[in-house]
Image 1: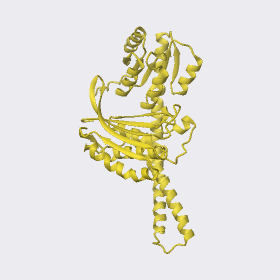
Image 2 (image 1 turned 90 degrees about the horizontal axis):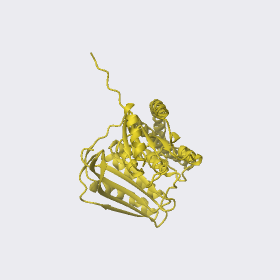
Image 3 (image 1 turned 30 degrees about the horizontal axis):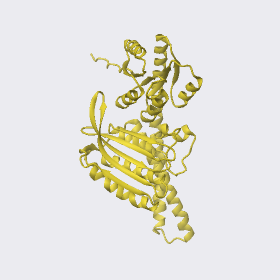
Image 4 (image 1 turned 180 degrees about the horizontal axis):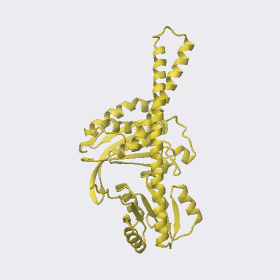
Length: 372
């Protein structure tokens, strides 16, 4: 007789500086069959959300170190698949509206009855599961559709390239100009479709990484050398500093190279003449699931335009232009950072951004040392 597989418990995190309330909620939810963790302040809550994948975070607004809205922004930026429910002792309409705008699913005011809280949590989890399934179905459909579109576009671009080389006879200047435009436009469309296909693969979990032992000390210099002419053309200084003591990592070098190239390309595009871009690689230790682990840290810092505080929480979201209502002045697919983050997370790493409008940006990649 086959045993029915054990159903996975929903994983929740309570972030609240009120010890009594936090403990009471944890006990209540644990008795209801939830897997519950606690964090006594905002910084611990952010750290916990990095170390474990939660289905739902119950987040207090007023906390002494980092307030709930700042934690909410960081969670939405770093772990966008995690839902957040604000629970606070302060009834503030403006705060509630701001929380929902930043991505919170609900805004509840203390005191709240245990039965009501449990009902709302279960409702939020059901909605989350339904949304996840819908996204999966949409991703599967989009993947098939994108392949169907890319194939003829690739054929069209190849045909234009064939004609441009004069392989079907000599061309007039006007014919050459028109074909060159078709070839260039086709390349942009194929690149966009390829980005969308890559992102869909990650969302569906259909990407197999070719992990091999690799050294950042050997991987980073050729990448910087490749982008250096592009930086020099804009009179931007590109600097690299690598700690030679970084251990060998187990990673897909081609995909990590794709991440660093994308970050550098963005940094160059958004830098002004005379700016500076620095790439640094070092090792850091960070607690993960109660264990202190070593990570390789690669940071790309620029002195460019920076990102506004309103846009920063959505910088890795593929729908960021729709969420923020702002369109980048630079011509990009808009999917690069979403793909980069997916690649890093597939390596069991994390990718974060720090920025301020007018003062540049720093994008940081953490990759686990060891098995990863």
